[in-house]
Amino acid sequence: MLRILLACLALFCAALPVRAFDTQATAAWVYDMSTGTVLMDHNADAPVPPASMSKLMTINMLFEALRDGRVTMETEFAVSARAKAMGGSTMFLQETDRPTVSDLIHGMIINSGNDACVVVAEGLAGTEEAFSAQMTERGRALGMTASTFANSSGWPDPNHRMSMRDLGILAQHLIEDFPEYYPIFAETEFNYKDRAPANARNRNPLLELGVGADGLKTGHTQEAGYGLVGSAKQGDRRVIFAITGLPSEQARAEESERIVAWAFRQFSEKTVAKTGVRVAEAEVHLGNADTVGLVPAEDVRLLVPALVQDSMTAEVVYNGPLTAPITAGTPVAELIVHVPDLPDRRFPLVAEADVGTAGFLRRLTVAARSLYGQYVGSPAS
Image (cartoon, rainbow, N blue to C red):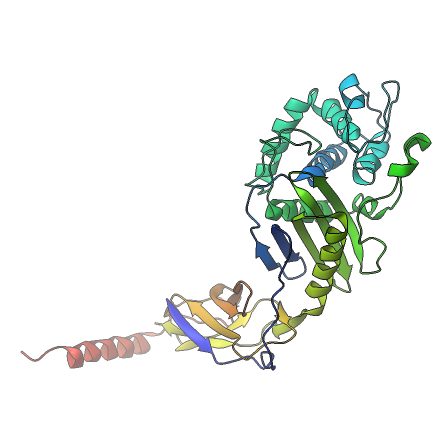
């Protein structure tokens, strides 16, 4: 493995280090979707009670049923006695009701309806127990390795757990895969049949602050504390985050706003290497050229702390020398950028040009050099 240290990219020159965010949450995960950068990881993989934030998985299961054509927005679901009896936040469904899929989506997102979740679970899987098993299986398939679901609503249960990273993964899935339904998360009011004026407002405290917030879900139980899975978009950047363990509704609102402000103000997206512009050279063995240029196949963009020291570094890594023939555009190396307080970012580099196999005379010269090197370096007899 050969490493080429790049002294410094011109971008990486400023005065002060980035100020780390000291969160009050017991667990938190903050992620910049535009560049794939984890901005904060605080106990993000710990399985914790997710409260109503886990309703996002129930919503996802219903979105997937819509995508697959198993239901439509007009499909009506029956309301069981079990669903009607659910406590906590509800949309006040009665057994005689036949809410549509659209009603239930709005009820889960805006009213945080526990009754709506049970209706969806029973309508899609027959029983809530079967639906919970399906949620767990589907979560694993989406990469949510720390999530286990015991119910559809987030009702307290020792076997109902999610991590903040898993909630972030789920949020990204909902945003990217269901753009036609995602705008519902930004709606601020829903009152099914005028039954719940006191519970008609969306609890997400960011939606009306003008910070670009457009989702996703709050959660609260005595065990979990107050939490939020949020997302905000400003310009071309989108940030998602998941926090839990806040002591009050006000603390949740303040912490969420602080996180959004920090994520957008402390970091800026920069192009550090352009498509096709050489960043280094790699040695070539038995080629018609001794080296080949290494270039990015596409612009290398990453988040850069607004205030950084010139301790940010970059290096190129490849297994070499490379063996000819080499075709232009073939991935042959990796650019690794080391950013203080952030995970390393890795970007593929490709061969800038074709390198053919060396002719006979060149191969003979290379062989002679190799033999000479061995001879000179061997101990005297």
